[in-house]
Length: 398
Ligand code: PLP
Image (cartoon, rainbow, N blue to C red; front, top):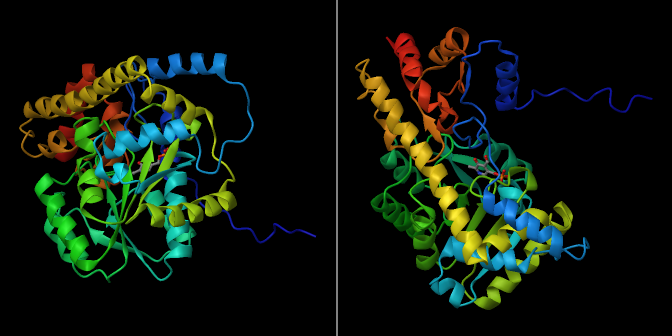
């Protein structure tokens, strides 16, 4: 008997497929702007020094590999709650926020999806159009109805009016997913005034906000990037936040993240946490330990924390500098105005506004690999070759 005879083959992840094409390309001047990982000037995805130091300490001090608890490492939870909600957070002071460790931001999102599907039945989840593609499949896999609000207009500009108009029509009680900062894939972030308007709609429509916070420290800084999460957390009784340590701690493969739940009071929080632990048990039992132990050590030690923050600031400044540099390089071709948005966007990604046809020409003629949606990973740019890239862009757009 062939049990697997009827199993259909599905296409692989298009971003990883792009990476394979990149690797096979013999062009020595090729440039990978596809995969969403940070890269330094040498094109490497580094392990921060603070992570290395914490790992050394850990290898000396670790006494057991027995399971961690269902909510994960308490030191990690304490550090992460303060990192996300702030040291002065009234919500933390009132015992209304709890941290459940998960395998990466993806695991945290999946747990959030499971919690919503099981404990808040009948609620749809609203995603920005476009969003990180895994949002679409992950929440559907959890059994949620997935719907969309506009985010980018036809002119490749952030469409705050379209977003607000749609959120104003969302059925009361539904969940709205918001990118806390460094929107993936577009790089367009809301201004403080925009966030206040969204908060009012969320409050008026009685929606449950779920923040995806995967790039804290990559936008304007650790504290600045948490501004919207903190605004909503202090203003509303209930908020969910998924935090990822993949990018800002460089811990990608260690699968380090958390779901932070904020409830109306400390009692209610314990009800929610009991559910989160029960659902996590079905999904992955208990979370992986190593990355969270590293983050807990760094956040709990002033020296390690300072070292980490400096390095993260360096990553943020490198990406911001590349954005400005590319727009400057495009000025030579009279294209600075047309691509000014690249310098205004935040985080690693840019919706460049290049069409699929232009992207394919860049790939074929210049070995420049970005996604067909026009999304580029700015961290993949080479500061020494911005003029060359600008010339290639000028060729395909004019
Ligand atoms: N959310 C967004 C918007 C992302 O871009 C990513 C990673 O690319 C994640 C969540 C999840 O990251 P991880 O599961 O690697 O921590």
